[in-house]
Image (cartoon, rainbow, N blue to C red):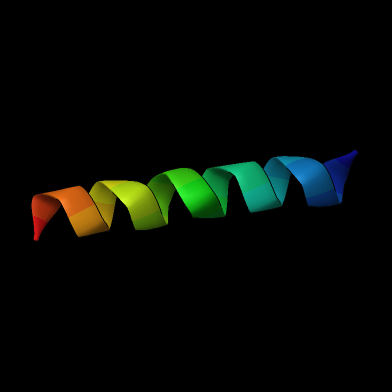
Length: 21
């Protein structure tokens, strides 16, 4: 599903940002 992919990418981006900080 498109929404599922968007959510997965968003979570990955957020996690990466949190780890980067």
